[in-house]
Figure 1 (spheres, helix red, strand yellow):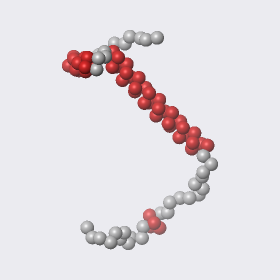
Figure 2 (spheres, one colour; figure 1 turned 30 degrees about the vertical axis):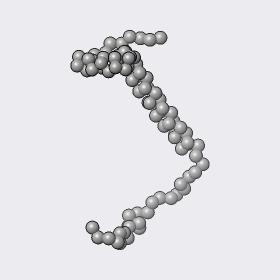
Figure 3 (cartoon, one colour; figure 1 turned 180 degrees about the vertical axis):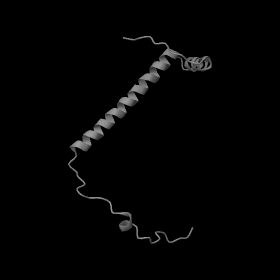
Figure 4 (cartoon, helix red, strand yellow; figure 1 turned 90 degrees about the horizontal axis):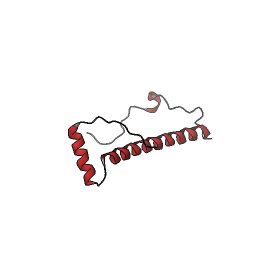
Length: 86
């Protein structure tokens, strides 16, 4: 089922969109529908990827244990790390 909506758009922008639609042999209506469809598909894809990552995190058998990075003083000795001067 398709529904009609009302869209408020600036006259200058609408003129440009009509020209672009004519150049692509389509309609403004089809261009807007295509944009909205693509937008929904992108968001759906992001949601699916996010869900897959969360599922992977929950089901993963790998664990970090009690590992924690060392404190700055333990990691950084203060010695120069590069041989050349700047």
